[in-house]
Each structure stands twice: as structure tokens, then as C-alpha cells.
Image (cartoon, rainbow, N blue to C red; front, top):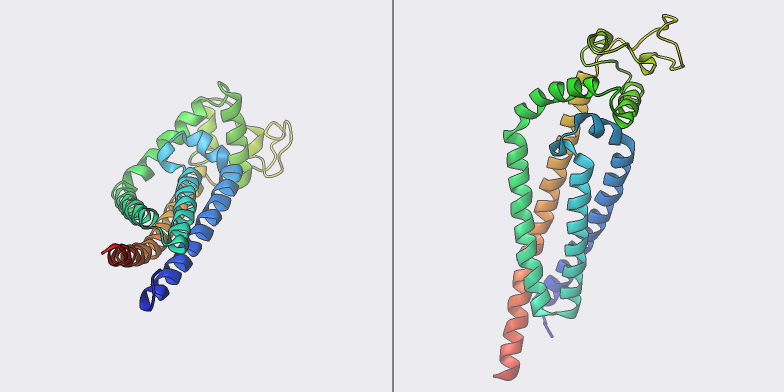
Length: 232
């Protein structure tokens, strides 16, 4: 049984892991909401690198699992659990740092690829019911039309009714007002905003996780020392 100052470390480790566990659950909830609300944008882009909701769900699940493992290791003062937690958490921190660096390095290529992805999605508008529905939802969600403007659609097909400010069947034929802005700007801003959000979340979690690794190492060292003193 750890005593003295190490007892404080034990409960601080438990508290840090509790925060990590709650944070992981929060990421799962936020990721699920974004996945349901913006799945149409991801259907058009067709690029898994831009799937922010999936990234949040993966990070949230890992944080929840590791937070639970760390809490159990701290309360039970289990050496194996505590060491396993410290190692896995260190690996997760490394992966998060690598993800942030890669995301920053590929920032420009992501932006250049968005326009091509949107144009490809326009070609597939009548080929896939899912893409058609995704484009319609994107028009209404971001209040935009086409890639740069509504005339982009005339290259591939007719302008969809979803480009109308007040969407209704046949509204384009009746010369109803259309959204003037293209979707490229809105989607770029959405992508960059979500990328910044993921980077910020990774930075905060990495700081909490780094503290957790330090506390876990201190606690595991104390547990091992007590075990050695007990038998020798």
C-alpha cells in the first residue's frame, strides 16, 4: 500500500484519468453528432483524410479505454495495469503528435484536393442517389451552389432545385432565386475549422496524457518498491 506523498500521486493520477475518460466520452458524442450532421459533405469529398468525425470517434474511444484502464490501475495499485497504461498512453501521445504534424504538413494539398473532389462529385450527381442526396443537403446546409457558382452545374447537367434559396420542385425552371456563393469556400472553411479543432483537442489531451504518464511512472515505481521491500 503506497503511503505519504505517493498517495497524493495516486489520487492525482486517478483524477487525471477521470478527466481523460470524460473527455473521451465527450469526443465520442461530438464525433457522432458531426457524423450525423455532415455525413453528406464527406460523401461528396470521398476523402477519408477529411473525415473529422471518424478521427474524433477513434481518439475518443482510445481516451475512454485508456482513462478507464488508468483509473483501475491507480485505485487498485496494480503494477501491471499502471505500467501498461503508461506505455499505451505514451504511444497515443506519439500518434497524436504525428497526426498534428502530418495534418499541418499536408494542409495545402488538402485545400487543393477539395476542388477536385467537389468537381468529381458533380460528375457523379446523377450516377449515385447517395451523391445526389449529399449534394442537395450540402447546398441547403451551407447555402451555396456548385463549386465556384451555380453555372458550374451547366457543364455536367442542369442546376439542381436544391440550389434555390427556397427549395421546391421545379424552382430552377421558374427562375427562383439561387444561392450565389459556391460551395468551395464554405467546404474549405468547414474543413480547416474542423482540422484546427482536432489539432487543439489533440494538444489539450496530449498535455493531460503527459501528466498521466508521469504520475503513472511514479506510482508504478512506488508499487514495485513496496513489493520488493515486502518480500526482501
